[in-house]
Length: 120
Length: 107
Image (tube, rainbow over all chains, first blue to last red; front, top):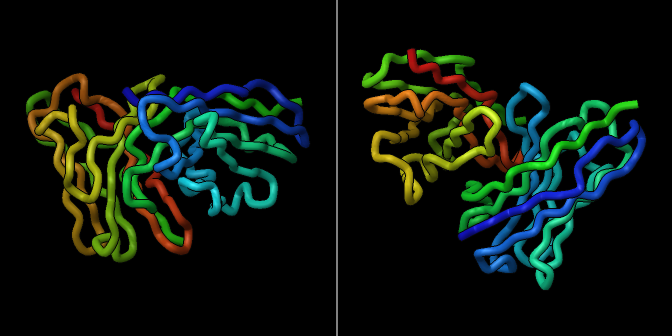
């Protein structure tokens, strides 16, 4: 059974940093591209960042480019999102999502999400 | 940048058919997929590659994509289908893009 378990959320002040993690199990982690998708309170889904299966290629939404960094550790089967220079508008539930077998592709599994609140 | 447009809400009576549209420039040239999100839960993939259903998704969910519009159809709608539905596609200019979401209400 595929499981994705996010952690690292919490409250942070504007301008601060936060690192999210997503522990994967139930599939060959190193074979699949992964993404982070966020959802602000009461709003829709917004793709944030993606990384190839090897980690060699990364992609970012314009809204986070230059502030967020996605990475992965295929030995630890863990996906990361380093978030710097956080803004109030970054407040959201952050989901990690597994891509389908032919990237760029749909997201076939999602984690339960972790809430990041940026507030003073 | 590429955008996908969905109606904010759709209402349907139990047992009837609901159709949710997703519009984007030449969307029919891309693969569209759909996610269901019940309140307080994570999104669940219900349709991928325009019309394919993942394992475990009921047959009453179907999809199509042509021209500028992708459509999610829920036949014989049940109370448990009440949720938010999001379309999604990939475009080279904006990478992964989601529609704004449609709230399906089963009256």
